[in-house]
Length: 155
Image 1 (cartoon, rainbow, N blue to C red):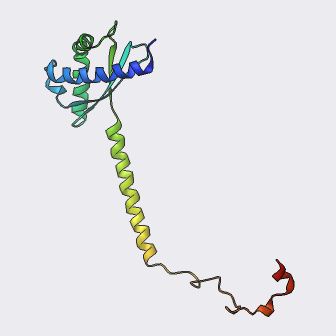
Image 2 (cartoon, helix red, strand yellow; image 1 turned 120 degrees about the horizontal axis):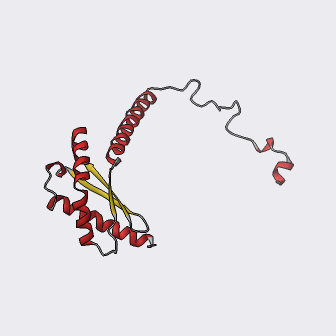
Image 3 (tube, rainbow, N blue to C red; image 1 turned 90 degrees about the horizontal axis):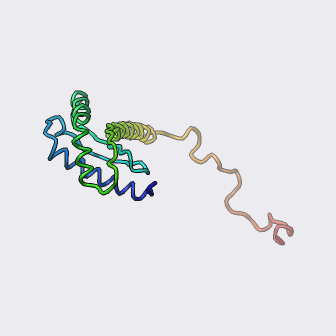
């Protein structure tokens, strides 16, 4: 079993090799809009999961998945030529959900900012329900020393 550091290095190398092979070896026009975002390899170096994104609509996403599945053999052959391990890992392609999640987060942040602006606008014209200083006392501000007895002075 390989160590995780070696698996991570191999994953980065596989990511680069697959990205280059998509542009150079695969002649399918459906792979032109694919971007390889990440790759992960199991610790035994037998299986590689490659994450990708596709620029376009749902049809482009499904076409890209079909094209990657069709080109899997060519890509695995290219990986085998360019890495230095005894056995070439199997390849699995997974659509990356990070752009979708990022757009959802951006929408939530815009909504929160809009609500904060509404609250700030309401707070700008707000007045206190009662007096401005509800803790006003009836005692005078100047205090005479005669009001203290000897016990208070000893403390």
